[in-house]
Amino acid sequence: MMIIDLEPGDPRLTADLLPVLLELRPHLTEELFLAIVAEAHGQGLRFTAAYDADGRCVGAAGWRIVVNTAAVRSLYVDDLVTAAASRSSGVGRELLAHLEQHARAAGCTALTLESGTQRTDAHRFYFRERMAVTTFGFAKPIG
Image 1: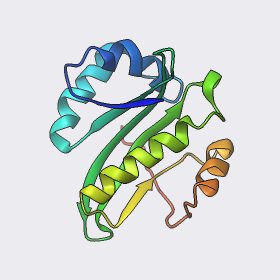
Image 2: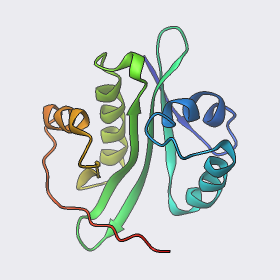
Image 3: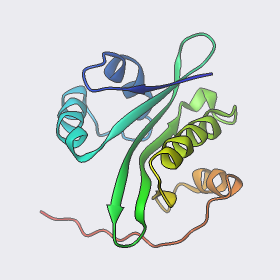
Image 4: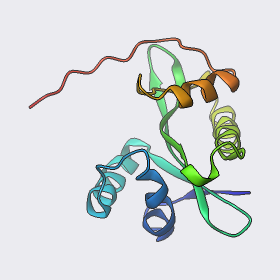
């Protein structure tokens, strides 16, 4: 498996990573995704893609380093998805390990993410990866 951090403007963002990301975020269009990348890169958003031996993108991660009063410095995972056809093959584990390396290099105290309450398969994966439920996330729709 090959894991690559992609920069804004890299055509692999839309050609390779976006189709995998759409499995988790079906509301995205290419136009909306590119607008988010353009704005959020300045807020620290980065994307990482996992490729199998045949050169197919089989995993995607969106992440950023966050500095706040709660965790001081953490690597926050916005998106973590393995293509359905490649699940249970180690892609998620490899992506998480890659992100942990980024977190250590950046002096982070934790790697954090939020997961929808309905995503029970993902929760089992996070528990296997020795992640703990440490907070509740709350949201209030605006508009």
